[in-house]
Length: 427
Image 1 (cartoon, helix red, strand yellow):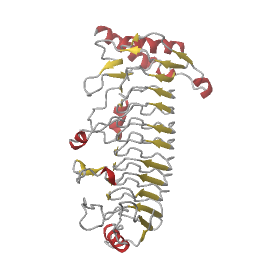
Image 2: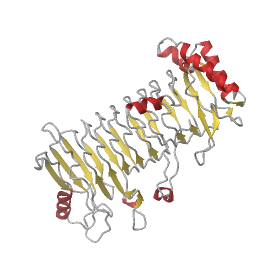
Image 3: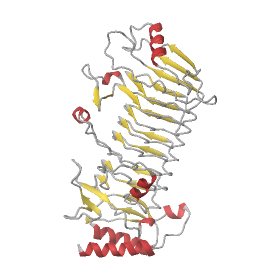
Image 4: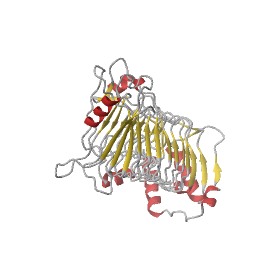
């Protein structure tokens, strides 16, 4: 313990008196030498500080390969540590956020092969609801002070902790092929789902352009918020997108989700270039006559849009949810978007068929709709597409949609005059 305290004192002094490297051109930074370890080595807090201290003294940009680092029994302070709070996860890489010396020279890093988790903050339940809370939380983010970091790789990581890479503004490549988990029905029904990409995990990573997570099932709150350079995303297994997940991603133009069925509050708010969003959830996921529930909400067979999902998406023009069994819209889902929107929809109107209701708010197009905003909405409904709408008369579909999908109401209580059309046709 005395050794750890001494190290902490040294690190504190390094933070106070340490100098940051001068700004250099990208070519010089990316040409940094590679530091590798040919044989397995113990990566405890002491070895981690030794590596950082050596890098700091050399004052040269480096590419760091820690893939052969191994756990040291009893190590809980930094490097590769043992995790006890998360079922199925044994080891986490925790770069010790308080340490600054040397981190600002690391251009890329390959984490130890044993690493299953980035930091240990996934289970943190602290409420983050204002800028002051966020600022404080950033101080404990795993990759704090990695100001030159461009690339990170971890082949066996399944969980990324809260704030793990927050404000790593130069980060442009993340390789985590195994992040995610297979969610069983019992997990969902018990509301025991696990966030794979933690809260605010990549918030402010302006350098990220493309992200692909093949196995991630749950994207945490504000995980990619203000990733202003992000233009392509690929999440084939994600079924839940939590609040503010992609808020402010100004370069996203099109998004496609194969399985996402629960889209949180302001999930794509202020994605000002977003033109089209498609959610391909299929009725076949309807299980044994009853929907799968999370906190009373049906998932997989229905798409649920929580308040203000696309609010402020000025270029937004197409929402395609035509394979969903039902679509639930909350208030202001499409508020303050473009002047005209096409909604491709499958909606269940057939008498006698199991239905989960349509609790969409009357103001899902927005509670205030100025003249320069939304004034035309077109619904397109498929007919005779396999089992979809096989026996439904087009007139019944039109009547059903027009009665259930309403437009905004002004402050004076009068319905807004928006051109709402319904087209029934094969798609």
